[in-house]
Image (cartoon, rainbow, N blue to C red; front, side, top):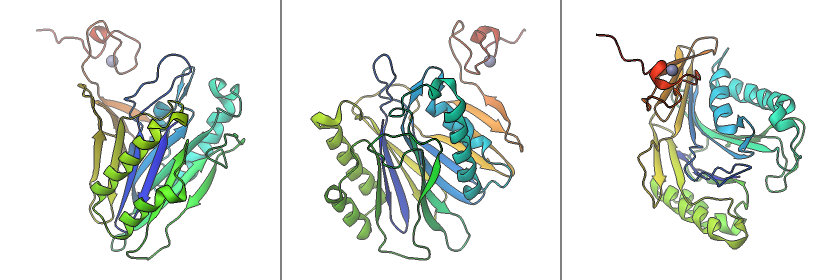
Length: 304
Ligand SMILES: [Zn+2]
């Protein structure tokens, strides 16, 4: 379970999520990279998820990364991708044996996609949730995923603020008010991200938060007029590990996804090919998932 805050103004969208990833056995991972930046033919979006993280060999992060890329064809538009993602999630939750047997209270998943339609002269923000539960706090899995639209009023400039809170302990209207005020007065997106981080940490510290929200956070910013997506990692610990969001780039002229140092390319039909494998220790499993040791696979030393 995660708390995702999506904060939208006319000119930028900020998404903040904590990095705690809970397993059904063992301690939680506080450095899980759950933020995905998605770029397709007509949109740039941030994708966050809350709900079931892992069950048996199913892992929501891996599933989402692979599926977002496969959802590109045939049109590579955000509308098409959201539609196909909804169908794929329904299928996965109906057929995956690791998920099917779970009680309806735990087999819930909500994905939030928020970004800008790149229409050329007049980029328009959007936010969409794809979910199999109606109420994000009361867990009651439905048999199908559906699109629960939260769409910007179109062609509005300035004066928009929308705070979408998904996950455990969603923000109350009173708690959202200061964030909305910042959006309305056109505060810098980084300042909004920092305030949102402060807010999520406050929730994580509540006694009834049940240890389900972590304190290591990620924030990403997508802007209406500039193409780059900016991300910040908010932590009081430091480790030698990649902190950037995973990136899924699916466009009609080819694409890739990267998570840490692993880069996978997409062919036109959505099938995948590994482009870059990060180095590993000789006897460790090869990061390409071949099942071989690194030294017997991508780590083979060239013969002189
Ligand atoms: Zn390999």
